[in-house]
Image (cartoon, rainbow, N blue to C red):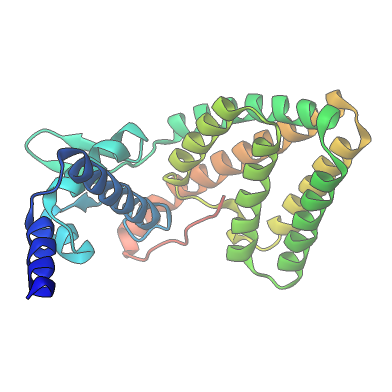
Length: 257
């Protein structure tokens, strides 16, 4: 019987309501998980720019209540990935070309700073790491793996920024890149552009390895501006093709960044 008493006592403890702090931590953790999954769906394009985020459908899909979902919406809005329209709901943001250009310009200035800093402070181990990334990108070019190349491209730039050692810059950079991903015009869909892009990345690493801060900064700045020019050119092509598509009903191919 003493044993039964102990079990009853344990059950009573488990039946007690959770402390408010524990409840808050659980909710906060769940919100972060929901936010992460929604962010993944948005950045992968599964939830496309302009798509409406329906609470009931997403709550069912993710197996959560509406509370964490609404909090995740708020966090995603702060991150610039969704917008809330009064009496209409929450939508994935669609970045216009002028805003994309502003992001490219800001990113170019940040990357120039990163290049200068790395030329002066990169370690041999870090240099070996980024050289390996470029090697992998060149293998993706030979394999005509545009998606693989795009992911390596993102990883390469994110790692360079991280290596610069400025946490504020890294946080701002990552937010800008996420916003820019909403402007889904990936320049690298045209296979002939991948070798050019890979060559630019090789030049960046070479400039950083030389220890020449000015050359490294310029290489990174020029690379971003080239990407901006390609994006603008692709946007103009899409605009020119739009009237034809409207008449024929045929979808035009997306370009890649």
